[in-house]
Length: 118
Figure 1 (cartoon, helix red, strand yellow):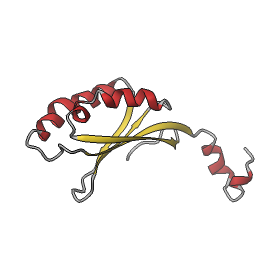
Figure 2 (cartoon, rainbow, N blue to C red; figure 1 turned 180 degrees about the horizontal axis):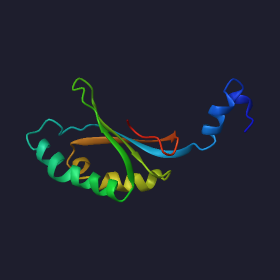
Figure 3 (cartoon, rainbow, N blue to C red; figure 1 turned 90 degrees about the vertical axis):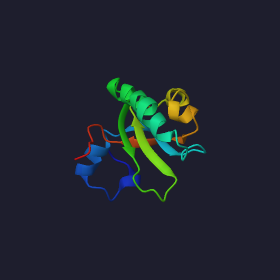
C-alpha cells in the first residue's frame, strides 16, 4: 500500500493499517436528570440490560463508563457498524436516554479489527 500521506510510516505499520475499518462511537454525557434519586435504578435495571443485549447481539463491541466525576462525560461505546442511523435508532430506545439521564453524540472512528483491552 503506497500512500504519500504515510511517507514516514514503516511497512509493518502500513500492513496493519490496510486492515483498518470504520466503527461508530457513542459518547454519553450526563443528561439533565442524571443526578436525580431514580438515576441508579434506571441505569442498573433498565440501561445496563439494554446495552448488554446489544453486546450479546454483537452490535456493541465495547463499552467503557467514565469514572471521573468532575467531567460531564458518562461513557464511551463502540458499535460494530458504520451506519450512524442504525446506532441512533438504538440510542433513541435506550431507557436512560429516554429518561434524560444521558445525552449522546455519535461519531465515526477507525479501528483495527481484533483490538481488545488487556
